[in-house]
Image (tube, rainbow, N blue to C red; front, side, top):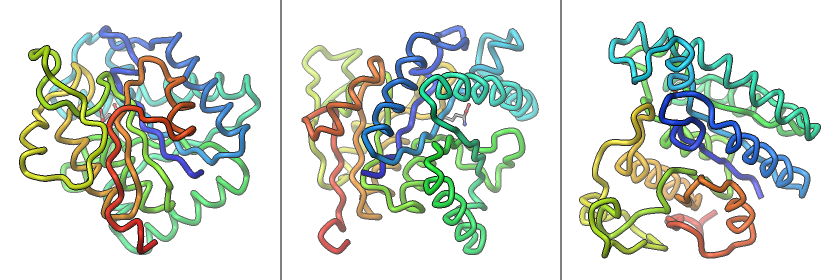
Length: 259
Ligand code: GLU
């Protein structure tokens, strides 16, 4: 299976913006094991701005673009240093790939990216992807990594995109406010009613939220790729996902039969 896994800032960091060491260690161990079992994994990781903000002592999401870009530049180093160190423990090599919208939309840049990803996968390297936050300008901004993960899945022809978040999946209502909210386990079409459930905001440092996840789902589904939203509190959940168990919310690829 070729798998794109996206982890959000809320999974990777504490509310201070500093790294959640226990969780990231587990994530790297599980992903290493999944690779050892023969699957191909691409990791889309947020956390640069959050971690950089923590390191710079900002303690909340920066608002102006240059502080955001500075924080991302600091945090991206810390993020990759951590991943490199942890994956090395399990004998896996990582590569950093930082993208802007232009790299995906421009035909020749996209073709180049496609070759780079496949060369990395040939070498059994684990590509770790983020938006190039410290240089991305408004024009080329994707803005959140849920869509970035879905876009990466279209480039590499992934079998599955998994968005690990701080919520179990898509609910019939906001589970923080409504105790009767029920998890929706399968979505075949993103209807306006479903979008109305999407709401807005993500965590203090992240940029996602449910509406971004629905946009990502639409990109993946249109490209013939299933997408799952699952809770990343326990990254071992990825084993269940690979085993095909009913976990989180699965968005079913619309063009699957044509692939
Ligand atoms: N690219 C951003 C970062 O690494 C995160 C975007 C998102 O939260 O989806 O900080």
